Image (cartoon, rainbow, N blue to C red):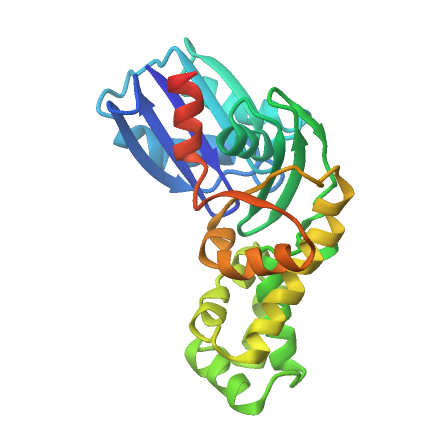
Length: 280
């Protein structure tokens, strides 16, 4: 048996099995070693993953963990946390971007992008990442992400850059006041998750020209500041993540305007990762 884990800022999806047809799935809270210590990750595993294993003494042959924040210097804390419960398993910890590239491109060359709570992108040669524009997080970067979209929406409503009826609908439907928004962003942890949680409002009001303009501007910004720094001509650009999936028409339109070819769009990388690990 092998374990495949795909972890973002919000959630971690776990697949345990021997084949695509014989697998069990578990979802836990997101794991990110930039925001969580090894002890915090151990506690999360102990409370939300281990109790849900059919056999608490399960020792997979290999664990493939793909996670946000799993840079080479941070991956060790995730590996150490996992080895506490799986001491006999070979544990391979890679970035979520490597996971997205394998899920989207398999063994073919392409450009792989993540548009979820955060955003990222890379050029992939079919075996490894060959170039990566730094995402820089939701304050300095993460263009086109849920956090960036939520930040733009909240800011536009607070500064009355959107029509009054739309602003009033935002505060009412999201059950937030201006003071609460600022408190959640500046005084509470994980502001990126909070901001990304505002994106359903954009989906519900996507018929409004002002919302379409916001979406098109954000996705165009992602392409210009990220994708167009690679050799993107005649190269398919693939996407993984909830934002890419739910707003795929707007993503495709922004790409069309820039003459960029969009390839595969997956809501979650797990399907592609299962194909990569079980079928390759």
